[in-house]
Amino acid sequence: MTRQMNPESQPIGYARLRDRRLNRGTAFSPAERHAFALEGLLPPAVSTLELQIARRHDEIDGLNDDLQKYLVLSDLQARNETLFYALLMSDPAKYMPLVYTPTVGEACQKFGHIFREGRGLYLPISARGRVRELLSNWPERDVRFIVVTDGERILGLGDLGVGGMGIPLGKLALYTACAGVPPQYSLPVVLDVGTNNQQLLDDPLYLGLRQQRVRGEEYLAFVDEFVSAVQELFPKCCIQWEDFANTNAVPILARYKDVICTFNDDIQGTAGVALAGILAALRLSGQKLTDQRFLFLGAGSAATGIAELISRAMAQEGLDLEIARRRNALYDINGLLVSGRQDLLEFQKPFAHDGPPIGTFVEAVRALRPTGIIGVSTVPKLFNREVIEAMAEINERPIIFPYSNPTSRSECTAEEAYRWSNGRAIFASGSPFPPVEWGGRRFIPGQGNNVYIFPAMGMAVYATEATRVTEGMFITAARALAEQVTDQNLAAGLIYPPQSEILKTSLHVAARIAEEIFAQGLARVARPANVAELIRARAYQPVYADRDSAIGQS
Ligand code: NAI
Image 1 (tube, protein in one colour):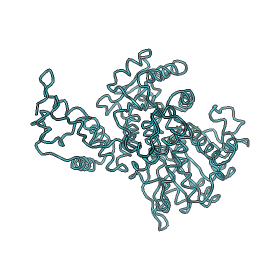
Image 2 (cartoon, helix red, strand yellow):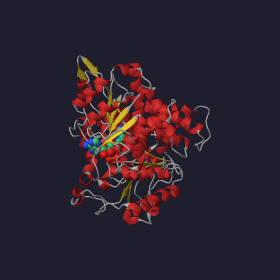
Image 3 (cartoon, helix red, strand yellow):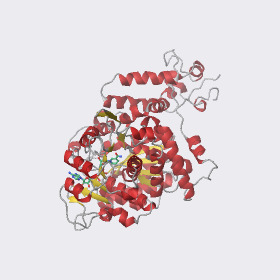
Image 4 (spheres, helix red, strand yellow):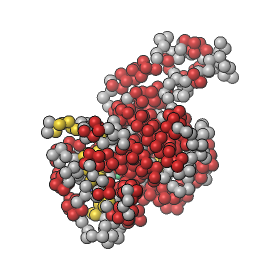
């Protein structure tokens, strides 16, 4: 066996321990330790991957602060990628809330205070004209997924500037952990155009550009430059827009969605997961989608995205699209969206009602008699007792979906929804709630987490090399997700499949989306006989692969 040395006579093994893709830590075998000059650099005992997972489980269980757990996981990701994903995939329900919402919200808020090393790409607007050059500094040449934010509306927490980087990092980790998208194809990006968060601007530890947000033409030109540079350097790349303020999110999506492979998870992924929840809820109530009426608290990008996808799904089931849109009413900070209002944005107008203005949410519930209410307002507690009691008066099984994130922004808790509706609510929330005991029954609240949709969408796009992401693909995803909810899940009130089975669920959803991609002629690879098999074959496995060890090669 030859010993590998680099030109400066530094044993290559030392560098291998610091390469997150090649590192196996204590799992390097005695033969590998010898071949890679690792002897002496590790304690002598050799661990299996299972033992390494158990060690990290123990370490994390010993901590009682979620942000600390988040940091342990981030450090592990930077040190040993295989172990990081093996750990996440060993217990997704436990680790998802640590890697993503709600914990990631705190990580973004404290970004400048907990920063350890640059991960992903930071594109400041001060580098306008040089975006391609900065993107070329990324070490991978075949990038298939970019999750990008400008940090202006992070979860329900507002403008966190460059601290928004936690979101692309977390989301991309979930693409891999929940649907098997190989991590080497992912690139997290922040477009730093400044921040209007004075607290951050006054914080000496803040790490972004210290200026107010750039708006208008200059902002759009910067986004255009970014998109063109990505197209040039990474022609197979799908761009996922994330946590932009709705005034930018909606026009950006409209500008690119028919031109490149792109989607906005806050708008379309949320819509997909909400539609899936509704389809499963209808299995519980035994009603038809076309008979539903929804009232949204909030009229931003999430609300209009969900309302539009529900309308299109209603149209697929035979309702006229315009009539379907009128079944979805929106209520925002200024009251019900009615056509007489002068402050409506273009993307809100299709949902404006013809009636008189209504100034309280509970009055809107009484007037419109919705079958479901969906909270995407970022404001906690607005689904109060009066609102939920009114819903329970109107409906035998009221659909109550407080979707605002993180938990502190939820429009109501699971316990409140079940209690105030006498256990009749069909409930799902954006952030997780623990099981509720009420009236001698145990309810398991579902989490309408986009994680049921976007990783599967990513996997389907990756495996088929799709050229576009369409609304039809999100409706297919929602139907594929809803059909995986078992009768047993429904009996416990659970309208999404358990998160512990997220990989299996996502692979099924991805296969159905991939079928749709082939059917629409949007794939860049030939259609195989078995599409589900294509998805399975492409899925990343968190194991130490022999190709990474290459003993004996010089
Ligand atoms: P946004 O900022 O675009 O919209 C917020 C809307 O709420 C605006 O229309 C605003 O007028 C309205 N609003 C604010 N205060 C209100 C009040 N007191 N009464 C009535 N309406 C009020 O935000 P976006 O992107 O639509 O997201 C909203 C929330 O949805 C966030 O908390 C986000 O985390 C959550 N969300 C949840 C997802 C999920 O759980 N699957 C996915 C995407 C978003």
